[in-house]
Length: 235
Image 1 (cartoon, rainbow, N blue to C red):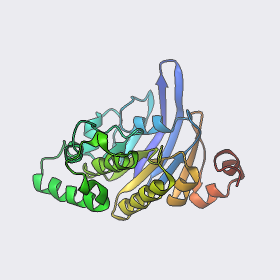
Image 2 (image 1 turned 90 degrees about the vertical axis):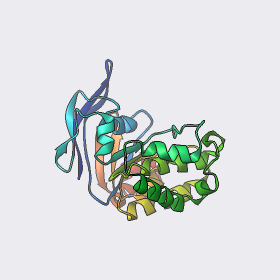
Image 3 (image 1 turned 120 degrees about the horizontal axis):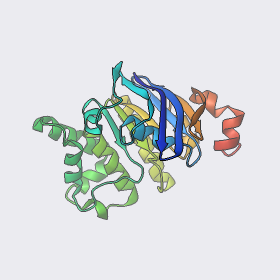
Image 4 (image 1 turned 180 degrees about the horizontal axis):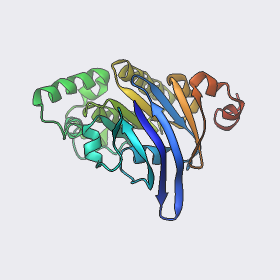
């Protein structure tokens, strides 16, 4: 289990997270939804130690992660695919995949995993030696997820995976996310498309101005009048 316990995060004098707690159990997909600026990305950055928390703890299988470096956290099985993809545009697709495995020493395993992610993302196989910056937006998102998978994460965090993509590509990305989960990876997804995220997820949390205000199964959140009015267009 990944357990986030009462984390507080400040940006200077601004209190971004006001005691956030959540859990992701092994094998689950969990959605974190909320308005822009509510603190969704801050939660992911706090878990990964990209931003240092003022208080609170993060545990992975009862092992305390708080205070560890980001690379150490990655080596323990957590990985963040950031908003905006952040691929290495001047490197090839293949080189980006290798960068995802930079902490690993098992050359045979790395090659095997490249073959696995290329099976998940056949478009990337066709563009393996192409500069990543010349890919389409959807292909760049696929590469960002594939690069994240190269660290062999137990828990994969996706920050706005559908951002800026055409609906047909969003469907393709979410289908692949489901396949990743079925292969044994647990996921925490921050997503602007709340309906899409909740239909994919097992459970969800709603964050508002740095606080978790509602949590429950995806079905419960989809049927919540407050969630429907605030995030699902009232339908």
